[in-house]
Length: 400
Image 1 (cartoon, one colour):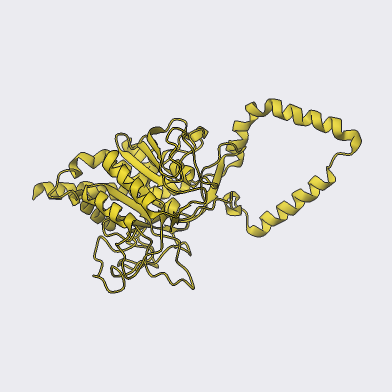
Image 2 (cartoon, rainbow, N blue to C red; image 1 turned 180 degrees about the vertical axis):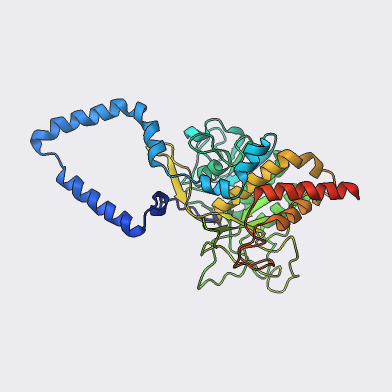
């Protein structure tokens, strides 16, 4: 079974407000006590109802203020990875690049997604292509879309990309039929001819047959046609795990598999560990296709969520989130260098160049060492350094 890598979006963590778990619990208890004391007695019910009515009447004027005041943000993730630097200094927004997100769907009524360039929506779960919706109870797809294209309270990584949304995961963020995800991936590259497929989903790898799944086969077909695929490495790391590789289809050779780091650059405790080989007895993986390839911010990421909520944002942690930061950075790079990358001996030539540039440009952590690390990958995403390295490799290839 394939599933969204991290479908849970429980709300804002205490650290988003600069508080510890103990402080948050103290605030909660104090608030409950104050509410108990403030419960209106019968003679005060009329006054309480008047206050509620007044608040409802003035809600439209004050709601935008409260959203901005109470909602923590994840601008640090865009800043630390230099995604905002590519936007602000080079004027890149993802314009002209087509990205397909395969997930639970999207809530286009969210105010931050109202201006998204939604090129096409297709529902592989329920077959309802006319009703644009997010089938996930936790709005996993909407959160991933927000990281990429939000333009409101938040500015996404590549807000002007052409967005294609393929619904392949159900309300629980999973699918019982792997063919559903495989069909969605094939539709993205074959019918929609997208430039990038972003997969914040995956399944446990089979060490005996790591590339034999239908999803992995669909991804390989996309790569063979020059389409970039970015996929979540998985949340299988940490003590006690028996999983010895990144998720399917992140384990496919040409895919960019993405792990997660904390805000301080340290590894997120659950980010997956990549194997040195293709399966238990397969060929050794070599640069730039060692797994995972890169890590990116993925802890306490705030993004767009259920638009019916008073504050329609949620936080989540995992390699799902970090995947979309890499997708967004890649979209900006393709906006600038896409035409040059389309020239090569094979459809995968551009993918190989971009992946080598990624390996060369990642920022290494002191605890990582100089070589590829089975959890950090080649290092943490630096979008500006990645773009410069792509430009340098293109120039070198043109001179030969």
